[in-house]
Image (cartoon, rainbow, N blue to C red; front, side, top):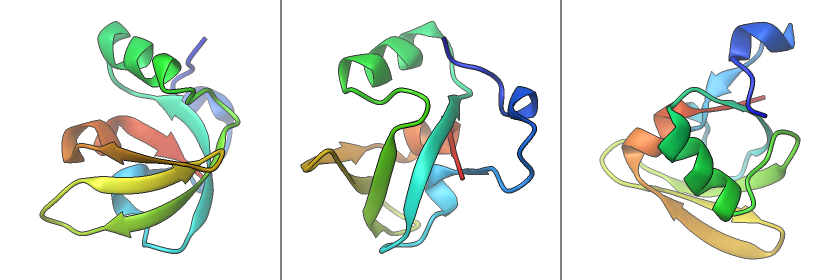
Length: 84
């Protein structure tokens, strides 16, 4: 279900942890293992899902808005979520 970023053929793919507040991005892939993928699926984060980064500081969690809901993702999780 989740592809590696290299398989998408897109060159502007970055980890969610590098996206600035106010930017809108689309989920491309999850670089983590099955446990992280299952967690993202449970949160409704699938490839193609659009999201807005509400807050992203280098020393804390990333807060995103997905389908009208706010989600708080830990720094480690956000580094494994690839977006463009």
